[in-house]
Length: 171
Image (cartoon, rainbow, N blue to C red; front, side, top):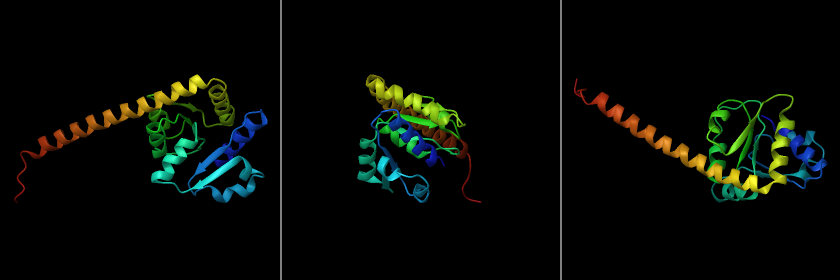
């Protein structure tokens, strides 16, 4: 969905003197690696992760990058926020709404995507206090979404119960 952008971003950061390594979880884009010389050196591939491996993955990264050209509502954003990992993502699908409460940045999905992501990452690398603050904001954004989800669940159950209270189950 945007693996080429991710590799270009990591390469651009390294070219500009930032000692970074990319980390990729999942199996979806592995077949495209051979198109990018040297990608094995700058990106560690974790494969499919769950449970303890997923926790280890989020502990290993400072920022989750989602450079997708197309997305719906990626669960990985919620997982990143819950782990205190800030997110930098393209503004596709539901991502802008998912990050509206804080914990990350959206950049336009365009020919300037890499430039926008580079600028945000450079700021976070050069000013670790901002990264730390954004990490705390990510956790708070996650907690807020959970509170909203619980309130929505309660409202739905009350509505459902009210609407069915007068219905006779026997025909």
